Image: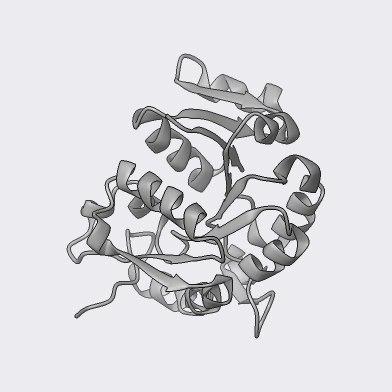
Length: 212
């Protein structure tokens, strides 16, 4: 069992909290308004707390906050994030028309790299950002085998994240370690395709995959 804090209580954070708790992990959602968030989790094996408290009592922290504000939010938690593994599943894009993803916030770089620079005592691992949130916790739900990419500088942290992905149902052969944190640029750039995909197909499960 791993103690996990999930920052962000939207659809992505909620799906990951449910999936990881069902796998036997001790999960706490970090919410800026815990009194408003807690009723939705009443009776479930997930706790709700202020972000700093959730992070402080966890080994692994999942960033499921909106990517365009993640850097500011997590930088404010630098002290409690020290020594933690930060699993970054967010995509940093400008807000496009109708709430669709727009241009990348960090062209020529990535949110993961900016987080790692801002949090040097934290091991940042980028993963699960190339798919609809439902596929994150149910990779067998789509016809083709999806790929979960890993990018990060700390090999031990990536091994821990790989184990957590396995707990969510990801076979090892569907997980692709791309290398250091700079390799997150490619997976994050997938968001430039998402508006066109969603206009054609709607909110249906999708993921990027590598076909060998």
